[in-house]
Image (cartoon, rainbow, N blue to C red; front, side):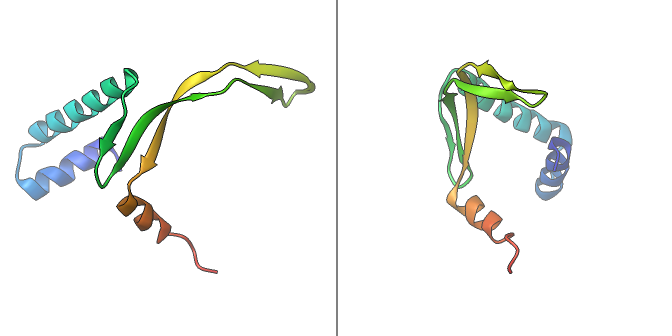
Length: 97
């Protein structure tokens, strides 16, 4: 699903103009991005949590030169932890043996 698909679906369900829906969705995403970029945790109940984690520095390997170590520095990454409802819905997709 793309942002456009989301806008069309919400517009049809609410009878709002697509431009208005797009503006609300875009502002929501902008505020979430800005908060996470400042290092804040963004928690959306029944959806999930966005937070910044620091990945430790580590040593990697170049597959073309496996005998040579490549240092990978520590860096900040965004982690998403799905909410309970989303996690349970996704688990239902697990194929049965």
